[in-house]
Length: 237
Image 1 (cartoon, rainbow, N blue to C red):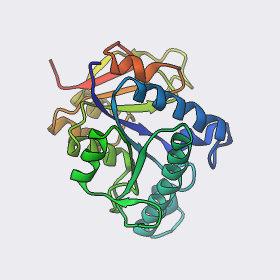
Image 2 (image 1 turned 60 degrees about the horizontal axis):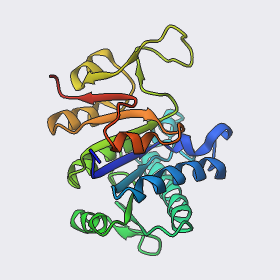
Image 3 (image 1 turned 180 degrees about the vertical axis):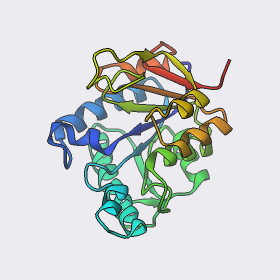
Image 4 (image 1 turned 90 degrees about the horizontal axis):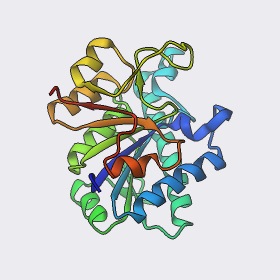
């Protein structure tokens, strides 16, 4: 394996499937299957899940809700998604731990960096919940922060498309896919891959990001093995 420890970033919207809201059991099964197959290869896996299928902090703020309150609601939404993913994985016989940035001792462990690393070393799948525990930070930023804290080899950013394009490929047939980009190019082009805070954090710490199609079976195993899949965001050559 090229990568022995990875952080997988899943969006909450992906869990909703075509419903657009809530958790689609069939989609959750597909995602869990991919994670389980990667785990069999001996790769240490951490996961950050968004909460957009239940509540988005920014969206709530646009309707007049206090931004901090809305963001905390979004953090609670991520916990629901994390518990759903944990349940699916554990029914497959895998050992998992949910670590929450907001203490919820009845359903999760508190986030402690050294504890999360130890879980990974024991080959447990670690699922990070409740974002960073602070408002005004997205789960993309959480992924960048946690990946650096646990010394992951790469961030795998799961999407519904097979990489980064110069425009939305769902709306523009002429959209051109990038095989490789630098952090600065992503920021300068205004590409909506991850928010600017998370991209900057990865740039400052040389944390590579691979954007790929999660729903193409076997993609995360191929990435871990070093095959070229999706779009690589890395430092300038």
